[in-house]
Image (cartoon, rainbow, N blue to C red):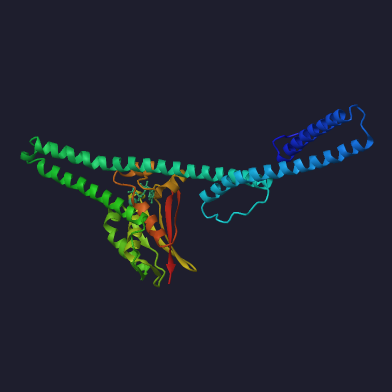
Length: 352
Ligand SMILES: Nc1ncnc2c1ncn2[C@@H]1O[C@H](COP(=O)(O)OP(=O)(O)O)[C@@H](O)[C@H]1O
Ligand SMILES: [Mg+2]
């Protein structure tokens, strides 16, 4: 028998009190009548009064206990509810056992929710730590270079015609790199806080892709990459911020050149009609991305191992910005890739 259950506790208490009453009754009967004989009627009175006392005390105990527990637990229940967001209307419970069951369930759910939140905070904290580590690492390289060149110039290099101009040029390059990193960070910060307003217009995606391809033609040529815009024979009109989409195309095509095939590289831009949207795919036959790294290429400062080997130049910010821009348009971007075969980036835009 579980004594901590209100019903059993009330039963026990009522039993003890009734027993005490019966003893007192018998004792007083013995004293009054001066002998141990108990009359039949006296016995009946004892039985009835005991039953009544039992019932009354049982009820009083049960109701009081119930009320007491209910009032205490209701407070806990209320505070759990007020902590929870979005759950304003709590049902009213009339008895303690109902509310105890419910509170137990609520606390269990609450615990699960909190565990999830803690996990999320931990991930964010890790991300923040990685991010700060990455930023300082990225800034360090050009800064140390500048420091080195300037020191060399001050230590006599300035008078040396053979190096002074060259070192100043390299200093300028490092400063340019610093400025680029800061601009990238600034842009991401603006995109993340939603400060960047999109200037939505209607434009021909084929035309824009050709413009971007022309702009990157020289670079592609240097890397032996052949850029092809698949011409659908008619304009592909979309809605979006033209300058930002130009940035998206530039970044993705630039990557396809940078991480492209060194011998017979080819980058193809294709448009697909998807009812409401236009899907633009940029496919290369370059170095590819490992499956395990695919999801991370959109992270700030993330560069794949193979990417790092291919070129030291990248900062790993381009795709993070690209993703932000596409998502700011309420559209999606994805990537698929096979090592040694090639990579395809695809993003959608609203068709008009
Ligand atoms: N077309 C591609 N083929 C292979 N790897 C790619 C390609 N595009 C991007 N990557 C990988 O994703 C990383 C992140 O790209 P991005 O954010 O543009 O940075 P960055 O170009 O400055 O290195 C690159 O460093 C590279 O490792
Ligand atoms: Mg890039």
